[in-house]
Amino acid sequence: MSSKLFGPSSREWNPLTLALLTALWIATAANWPLWRALFALPENASGRGALFVLGFAGLIAALTLLLLALAAWRRTIKPVAALLLVPAAAGAHFMGTYGVVIDPTMMTNVLQTNPTETRDLLSLRLLASLLVLAALPIAWMWRLRLRRLGPLAQGGRNLAAMIGALALGAALLFAIFADLSATMRNHKSLRYLINPHNSFYALGVLAHQANAKPAGPPLPIGQDATLAARPAGAKPPLVLLVIGETARADHFSLNGYERATNPQLAKLDVVSFRDVSSCGTNTAASVPCMVSHLGREAYVARERDQENLLDLAWRAGLAVLWLDNQAGCKGVCARVPNAMATEGAPAALCSDGECLDEALLHGLDARIAALPAERRARGLLLVMHQMGSHGPAYWRRSPPDGKPFQPECETNVLQQCERQALVNAYDNSIAYTDRVLAGAIGWLQQQRTAFEPLMLYVSDHGESLGENGLYLHGLPYAVAPREQTHVPMVVWTPSAERRQCLAAQRDAPLSHDNLFHTVAGALGIRASEYRAALDLFAACRAP
Image (tube, rainbow, N blue to C red; front, side, top):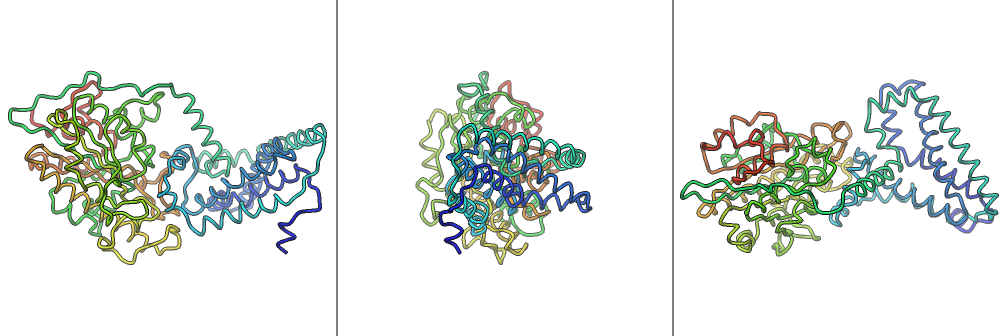
């Protein structure tokens, strides 16, 4: 049987036939997440809805055939079809399994994924999707003998197929336009489920943005930066900015969550801000935005990259160090001293090329001592970028002795876990972040002889844990659920007076827009980009 399916074929096929079959396969089987989402809508529960979905499938098939007909030549159709099938199979898995969509932001995440993150996403379900939706069709296709026609004959057939596909697509679009426009207007994220056109569209947008971006370094900021004069005898500031990963504000017991996910921070007189919104729904979008002075709306609309908080601190004459325990700093630390936490970390904290977040605390004194002494004398900005609660392998984010919530989900195919086991694994990662932050505060307390310390922790974005069938993060900001944008922010300062002042703002609506100005103010930086109205500490600072 297998030899008949995958052995050499005696029949000669026209490349156009292969193009048509590929288009139909992609429009139907490879787009199952789209059809599932459409049939889940109440407006498609009727016979009219079923006809709309059928027409939409025909429209996708026609558009796909239109593209494939361009490559429907004896030597090109097989590799081009394979080029569509592989990303379609992978995209179907991730969209169908985790409820994500593939837009330019998600494609940025894909292109920046490191080997460790790739490992966390591998599963038998992914391999099954690649096998069924791509490998088997490609293997069957490769056995086919293609008919040899002259350029004019094949070209004429291809042109006729393109005209036919265009006419069919136009007719179907006209027939379903009212339903299609209403659906896409009311459910904007559905357009990013059209597979694999979503992936190629996203790549095209990123390529256009890269080409449109002016050459050269980012625009400088803080060219007028100065440091506020310190009172006589005052120590230089040491601000520890901890950028969390994938933490949800509603899973912090400091914010009222019923489980004790912050037992150590609860004993350390910290201030937790309960209504903080992120700049994006993924690391690639949020991290550069949160250290920008522009704010989310202006950052998204920017035409050219600009320097950031780290550059400002360095230009003001302060010592700066970025410590990373994740997939890099997304370019924001490119012009200041930076290091990976995995370098020199104790073996007990690391496995398979990945370290637990306590590696960020290892060897800190030596790292700080290596910074220029004249800069340290003015102050220090230390940024730690956590692995935090990075999914879907949540169980990897906490050590064996840091798992108070059991049983724990130990697979990256999250739907296979009981809901409570999934939440347990996630909450264990939050509890471990609590331990790491408590350790960081302990280290800061030891620095009080030389510095005036402060810690500010804030997550880059949140996470969906199966609510409404959604997992992970990365949905377009306009349609993202609050679970993906509501993030924790915690401040520790040894000053009881300042803590009391900050506590009065704990329920105020805040966002990542406050971060740049709050940290700049805490470091005593004065520059034209600084806005006191966005500085959380401005009202708490002695005049």
